[in-house]
Amino acid sequence: MAFALSCATLVGCDRQSARTEPKAVTNSGLYTWATTLIFIKKSNLELGGFENKSALLDKLVSIDVISKTDRDRMARDAWDRDFIWRETKVGTNVVIRILSVGPNGVFEDGRGDDLCVEITFPPDDRPAIVLNGINRDY
Image (cartoon, rainbow, N blue to C red):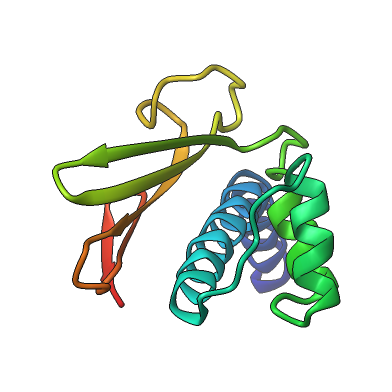
């Protein structure tokens, strides 16, 4: 009986993991983008003029800002879709939002099953990260 219960529990955990793992992988990529952008800003690295995100990621690997593993995690979400970038100015702050359309593949502007990170760069240089509604000050 205990064996059957253990197997049933493991099967349930496996199904739960299959649902939550892609979100965790995508959130990890989003958070890595946020911390990398903050590092770039604080280090005054000049990283403009890249043709695309892939070229930027390759440069970040070549100067040891991120690892190859980070590069892979930051290239696309867990559903193999490009991240969507939005940069706006809110008052004196620069706000960068990076979104994944989530498992359903429908852009819902950060709502629904979308996953997103928002990095706010105020003029006083104390950036803040909001990952899917969770605040993290830097």
